[in-house]
Each structure stands twice: as C-alpha cells, then as structure tokens.
Image (tube, rainbow, N blue to C red; front, top):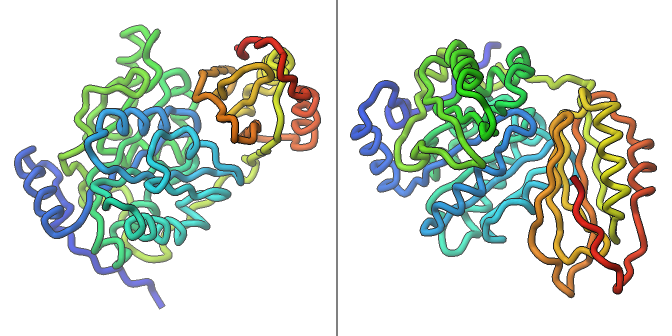
Amino acid sequence: MQDKPLAWAQSSHDTAGAPAAVAGVLVEHNMLMGKIPVTVITGFLGAGKTTLVNCLLSDNRHLRLGVVVNEFGELGIDGALIDADEDAIVEINNGCICCTVRVDLVRSILRLLDSASPPLERLIVETSGLADPAPVLQSFLADPALRERVFLESVVTVVDAQHAVQVWHDPVAREQIAFADVVLVSKCEALPAAAYESIERELRTINPTATVERTFRGESKVQMFGTCRFSIAQALDIEPDLLVEGAHDHEHDSSITAWSLASPGSLDAARFNTWMNRLVQSDGKNLLRMKGILSLAGEPRRYHFHGVHMLLETTPGKRWLPCERRETQLVFIGRALDARALSEQFRACAVAVQRDEAPPGSPA
C-alpha cells in the first residue's frame, strides 16, 4: 500500500515570485485568521543560529516572541543562552527534530501556544545543526493542529564563512541551504570581499532563489519579519515527497556523537584554557561543535563558551545570583569522541570554591 500525500491548502503559503505587497497581504490574511507566523532558523553546527535568535529578540522587544530550540545532545545549552522570557521558550534535547523527536516538536509548539501569557505574536524555531529541514517543514505543512494555529513565514539558514568550504559537501548542510528563503553568511568581520563573493557564488549554485546577505554578530540588513517568503512550490521542487507521510528517511552519520556534562562548583581558568588548546590542536578536525556555560573560580559572572573545530571563543554573561548553584555545563559534538577521556580531563580542571580567591581571568 502506497503512502498518500497529506492534505494541504497550498494557496495560503505559495508566494514564489509574488511581489512584496502580495506577500504582505498573505501574512496579514493568515494573522487575521488567528494564525501566528513561524520563522525556522537552520544552519550547520556552530554557524551562529543562537546569535541570530538573540539579535531578533533584541531588535523586536515590542513583539511577544516564542522560541523553540532543539539540541542534539542530552544537555540543553542554547536555551540558557537565549534571551527570551522563561515562559516563552521550550527546549527539545537529546535528539534531532527532523528524526525521533519530531512528535515532540508539534507537542512543544502547541503547549507553548496554549501556556504563554500574554499570547505569542510570533514563533522562532531553531533547529539542531544536524537537522534536515524537510521533515521539520513537513510538520508545519501537514500536521492539522499546527496548520490551524501557525503558518510558515520563512526559512533562514546561517552559513559560517570561516568553515563554509568544509560544509559544501555535507548533505545535511546542502539541504539546509537549498530549502532556505534567506541565507545569512555569518562571521564576516575579517572576511575579504573576494572571499565573500566566492562563498556567495557557491551558495547561489545550491540555491539560486534565496536572498543572500552577510551578517555581523547576528545583525543583518534583511527584514526578517513581515514578509511571507516561504513557497511550497519551491520546496516541492527540492523534495517532491515533502508532503508524503513516511516518505522521508533521514539518517545521521553514526560516527557523530555528543558528550555532555553538568558539574557543580567552579573551574580553574588556566587549566581549562590549557585543556581546550591542547584538545583542539590534537582533535580539532573531529570537534564539530563545542558550547557551554562556565563557572570560573573567583569570577562573579558566568562565561559562555563556544568552539567550532579549532576556533574557540568565550564571552562574559550574567552575574551568578547568590541563591544560584554555580555549575559548568558543556556539550561537545563530534566524531570519535572519547567520553571517558573527556570526563577525566574535565575533572582535572575543577577546583574547590574559595570565597577570597582573586579572579584568575577568563579563558581564551
């Protein structure tokens, strides 16, 4: 017995080639029907999706925005890094929303819409860096409960300029680019014009219809909200079976795993620095993504830690509150990860908390 295409009302979404005014009318029509617009943000591991989400939240504080964030590992880090109201954010951990936890995506969105007070005006969905967009989009297009409440406004894919060449041949990364209505090239601060032009040319060979723009720390000239860019016709050109339940079979590279931990107490910043620098020197090619929240001995603020291959960055965050339990949370995603060795190396960085300890400085 063959799977039958799922019912779907194409006219409310298909805006391919429509003038901006027409697209705006479609957005208004959907919102008058009580539906709220959804922006799906994709991009490979470490591309800068969370940075973009925070910029959107900061630039649109006048709107009541909800956020659904998905992570590949068991421990959720991105939710703590997103500056959204506590009741307006939902995390889906330990899986990819294009695979085993797709049912959780629908349930989480419906629960968020029902519980948020005041009601949400827009929704942002940040997928895992390993997520194929097709099943995610299928959820919004085919699930009856979601179709009554929300509509897809646009798919935004973030591409890391520093590692663009390395992901051209990854099938998931190419799918993320192919389905995009907007492609934002991140980390362009020190990128020569010729290098950016080369990246843009390659992006347009994968997706000739998307709006391509560079972004600096998540800031972009592209107006993200208010224009319905998503087109079912273009999506079906890429994935003809997009609306056929069960037709999409997506499998991740089995060599990619996640290691995560949450450890109370604080770290010695110098030891952590040394560990990270040695680790990226020896295993940088296998470390697809590292992220975390660090509790450093003698430092009153938490530090946000990010790494992609051999690039490391930390930035200071909010101060720890007196009532909070200080702890470090880390997630590493990569190939051939040795969980036991990573745990032992991490423990060597831990120190007992001393109230009179002088701040040791932040990691590199």
